[in-house]
Amino acid sequence: MTAAPVGIGSVLIVDDSHVQRSYALSICRELGIEKLHEASNGREALALLTALSPRPELVIVDLEMPTMDGPEFLVKLQERGFDIPVIVASSRERALIDTVREMGGVLGLHVLAAVQKPLQADVLRQAIQSAEGRELRRSAQRAELAIDAAALSDALERNEIYVHYQPKADIRTGIVRGVEALARWTHPTLGPIPPDQFIPVAERNQLIHRLTIDVMNQAMLQSSAWRARGLHLPVAINLSPMLLERSDLALEIASLQQCHGLTPDQIVIEITESSLVTRVGTALSVLAQLRLRGFGLSIDDYGTGFSSMQQLARIPFTELKIDRSFVRGAPERDSLQVILRSAIEMANRLGLVTVAEGVETLQEWRMLQEFGCTLGQGWLIARPMPGDDLIGWMKQYRVQAAQLRA
Ligand code: C2E
Ligand code: CA
Ligand code: CA
Image (tube, rainbow, N blue to C red; front, side):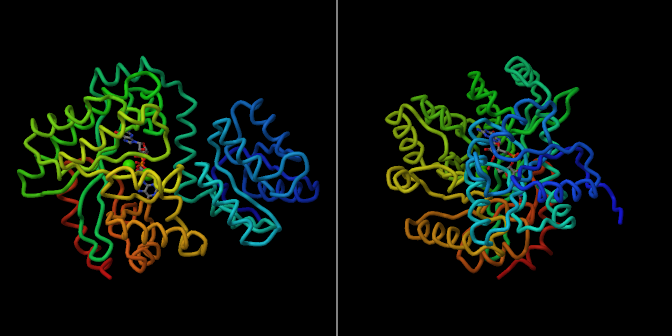
């Protein structure tokens, strides 16, 4: 039987069993994948990944292997910064496979699926063609293009960085309660470049302050424009933790807010818990100042970093954003539900607003409703959009909102 090609050109199969490898290769061939690479353990696979250019677009990895097993291989992938989509395939029990998938998610790897062997062509096809799989491939293709500090600096100079907004909606009623500002860059020749690529460049090259102020200015301008049209929505802005080392940051944000005629409670500052801050004292003082002035403070990507509890107790946060790796697929996975439920309960007890990121399906939405989460954000509600589109979108969203109501 021949079917339509699956849309990727190369794959690396990592499995110690020759029979299993051949079987996986035959399925990939059946899916129309042309370049097939194989390795019999994690170490061999890493060596191949380092040597191959271009890199394979997908890795399918077994769990039990001599020399370097699946879990260790995943840790090494992360440590070496290989940003390749992974599918975990094993003949071990479901719970164990799910745990490894979870581990991959926590490490920040893109685990598209965790499947039980024998591999099946349609299961593989589904994972590869999932929205996430497609998105990842697009950004991987662009990652090959060089984005350096000079290009980014020029972009800031030429005002090529702009902002899109993604709604956050009330989980009980579906009503829009705020938006998150997300930086966008369309390079004149390279096209759209994802923030996961240019934000790290900005952070490494002392451009992040300029970029953040630029984004804040645009977001606040947009917010005043919405207010002028009767729409009062808090705007969330992402802040790199390294900026917390600037002792005058709170003052700077406050003067921007005043310039735009906004009140601080209309602005939420989202900070990821994953990155480390070296000057902890200054960071704490900036956070305290922001909170004292009345800005909202949100812990972003909750669950992916460390010392979560300690941070929560120490810093006057107002909101907890649960990372999308805990939301996606949760209705089918008991272990994710346990994590979600306990994060929401803890946040509720601490008096924090909870936001679930990356809600893509109605099932996920209903589950969050049951768990008592406050807000949901994700493609189910809307993709990030230009500020000018928001009011029009809200009009047509009303019908959908009614269906989301508990
Ligand atoms: P984040 O803060 O976790 O932002 C949410 C990301 O999830 C956004 O990716 C958004 O487009 C994506 N997303 C939203 N709903 C869904 C969904 O249902 N499914 C899936 N699969 N994804 C969804 P985006 O825009 O690519 O931004 C990536 C990251 O870049 C952000 O992650 C944030 O950490 C960073 N970033 C974006 N803008 C800024 C900025 O102005 N300053 C800083 N420091 N970081 C920024
Ligand atoms: Ca965020
Ligand atoms: Ca996040």
